[in-house]
Length: 201
Image 1 (cartoon, rainbow, N blue to C red):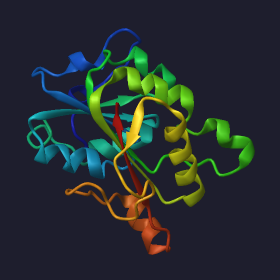
Image 2 (image 1 turned 90 degrees about the vertical axis):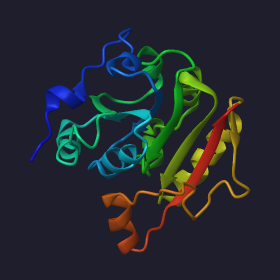
Image 3 (image 1 turned 180 degrees about the vertical axis):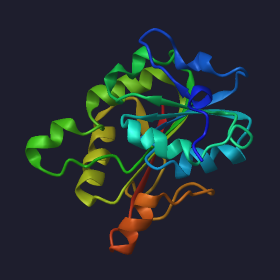
Image 4 (image 1 turned 30 degrees about the vertical axis):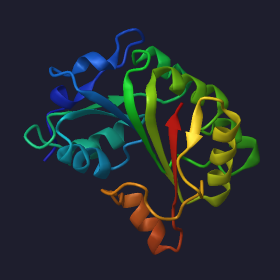
């Protein structure tokens, strides 16, 4: 059964801030790349005093997420079909996000495609504008070279601080780690994720 899209899916228009889509104002968290919806359906259900936006560029994946959502269990979740990049500043108020989750972003492994990677300096600086001070960003990837790229990008950016002794930690850094379908499949093939945790200074 697919959940009511009119309830969960909101349209992203530049200047119409997504902070306003919830009837109850609470701390707002963002998941970039909601995939098949494991995280956005399960994690928020245990944090009903927070609001969550799932941002996913693929309409098919939005439909996959809807299959796992219900108004009863997920009243604090909304989805938006939107590509994430530096334009994120157009969709959230400044210093309004309490945290961001980025699960297995596309590594674009070929060198000529590296410019397509999500984690770039312009994106990190834009994200810093909409994050509250002390807000946390959790990122996971099973692509070791991309993990090293992510660490280097954050190291170069003045707005963030790593919260881990090992910036490419191999153990989840959330007590309530949600194993996504992608993580499960890749682990079965022998690819295990690195977990990175940063704080907005």
